[in-house]
Length: 305
Image (cartoon, rainbow, N blue to C red; front, side, top):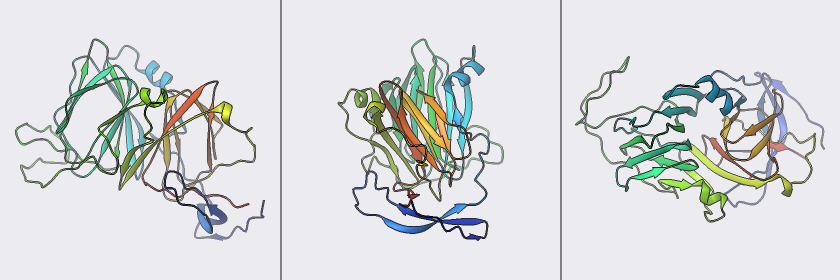
């Protein structure tokens, strides 16, 4: 391991690191670079925190049929856990410029998306809707539905002209015209059934590919890993936080600035930008995380050896 030259200036330490990550893009090679890493660590600002445990969220809302909890809110993305009672339905809506996506954790939701045949999504489904594409969601069956909902930070919502929009503090809704709508391009699909991924029948690993957001399905098994090294810091990102929804099994996280985390299915783990983090498959069987951040080809900075 080389010795680091740490140069303090403008509140930033410049560490000699190698940008060697080439996940999902097939480009070989690496570069030695001076990467900006904050001297003062980026804090976890509410609602962001290192580990949201689904079991604790459910316990806090026991007996409630409908509820919403903010989980992530930063410069790039925002996310909520949302439960809807049986028969509850969202208004028909769309977002002017952003793609929205969901992980279905429990119950059943009927999605009606413009241009698509309606379908029912159950636990394990990953669903997305492009910008300016109207949709509704409705809980079907006799149990509440539970979803993890993600959108780009600052996303706004618009409503069809034939419906009455809600009252929204600070805004007035005007009847206007807007051209075109988003499409399922760049390999995006209306939904992926993770149950098919777990069974080995679904091979797609990039769930969301968007100019301002990405979501990757990353499966593995602890039994296939070499023993963990205490000196392994993992990597960090200079311009974006990253968070993960645990789709299957358990994940072990070492994140700079917090205690080691063992996350279970349905939990959310969050690493602010500039924090070293090392995700690792854990438990006794297959595991999988859904990784989310604001860039399709985010830079991963590793220690230079």
